[in-house]
Image (tube, rainbow, N blue to C red; front, side, top):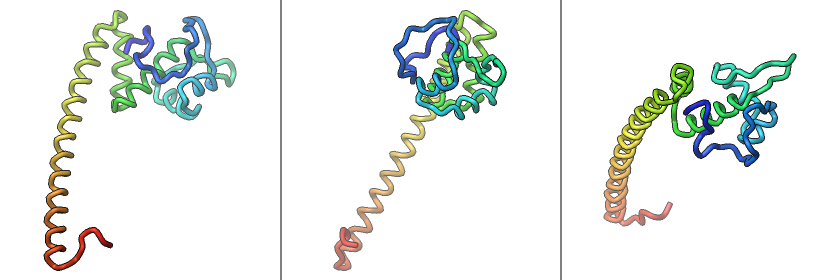
Length: 150
């Protein structure tokens, strides 16, 4: 989640070349990432992005744009905002990005374990409900009632 490199599989719809000196408006980023300006302001309020200001106008750098891409990807993957902040902040500690990547790898593995546990739990619940459906359908048939009719 290096702030220097664009996110892999970014949610950005634009294929415009990336200029590290370019300044983006909130409207441009909203369109590019298909999110509302309110969402961007929320991430700003949370301290995840810090645009410059020119009067009342927010000026987003290429770094802010990249961070926004990572924030959105992190949310899609199920990371909490606190986790996303910690991962992004690691880049400030280690500009090589190695520490950040290691922590992303560790946390991703934890998320995979959690999701696999949840999948096992869901599979077990589905199995139990299928048993209930089978038993109740059999009981209704035994009583002369079609289980498929309302």
